[in-house]
Image 1 (cartoon, rainbow, N blue to C red):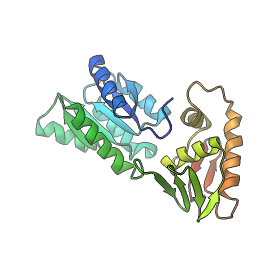
Image 2: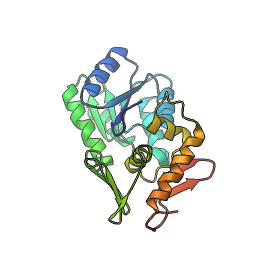
Image 3: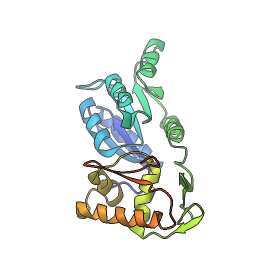
Length: 233
């Protein structure tokens, strides 16, 4: 399980030594890291774990990096997912092809790990303006991470530890629909023995706390799918 609030980066690369080097440098800089060795595996990881950014090699087995990037951009749930293309192909026409496929940035191998980290932070910051902030906001809900307080329309919202973590997760991904399995993974962790129905219990508690002072219900239930923090019911 990644620590809550820690950006998750998916490395899509079939060269194991390069994956090891990238993992070391990214984890040292405070990122959580996942890895996939081919295009098909990458698309599965993206669907199941919802990374905050993708480092994507151009030349991959099964499905090319260009096609992975196109599929990311075609899917509404991942359309804004930051993608940096990694490739040994440095000529201008290849860079243009990479960017035209939907990549946010393009880095030619070999590269400086510190430059890659800087570019990674930049694309995440553009996609998630609140990523580095101590205060998260959505609609009239405000979460102060430093003071560990939540308010809605200026009124204090009293949450238990689990409801606080759950709301934090939703605030980092507003309007995105999560299944119960994804919430268990993201809030409780891979190895948690918490039962699926426990998610519903904590959703009810969070909804009750957020709505205590009135206002529209910001927790949207999507039948047979899951839940989202969404002001448009």
